[in-house]
Image (cartoon, rainbow, N blue to C red; front, side, top):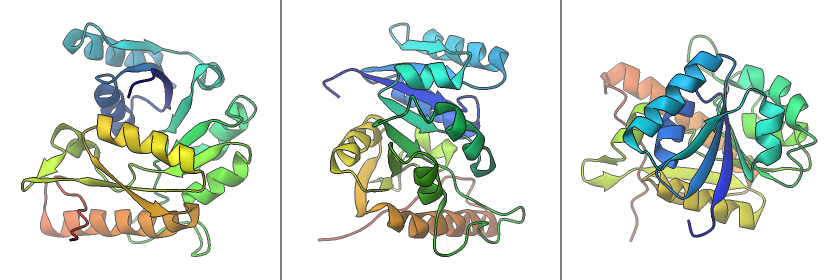
Length: 220
């Protein structure tokens, strides 16, 4: 990306949060990392800087402060935690891009806890009415960030959102992470994307794919 972006990753020490942090630190980004366990945050920052001394990354002790400084906010927390975080960052997330990566899976991974007429991303948009919520990265596993090319094909990251400029911004982040961005439509399409993630998890478990799996849209 030509313009340096400040990205807050909330839940940075989880599997997806840390994968995103390590990958996006390679681009022209300033990263602000938050998680409840500050020792794990410090370890992640040290790990990133040990492999990339030029990485602009730091741990932040409060999600509100991280979001206040950020241009882009990544919600890398479970669906059940999003409401609490959204309440804390609502005022400082005004007009900012907020990326929803959560999949609202039930405990048995055989269904979603959200009703069919909504999605985790749409619920987040309701909690953050003045933010630009974009669904992205929910259809890729954390392990795929180190190998975004499978069977000689670059894995797609499917994106949905209502704001055109936000979609461009997130598409650029997807490319920085090594994936191919595919804009699917408005935020309501995230209902489909979250069900696709559920299907991919079920297929991976059934076929023992070692979590090296992803979607690729083939077309002429």
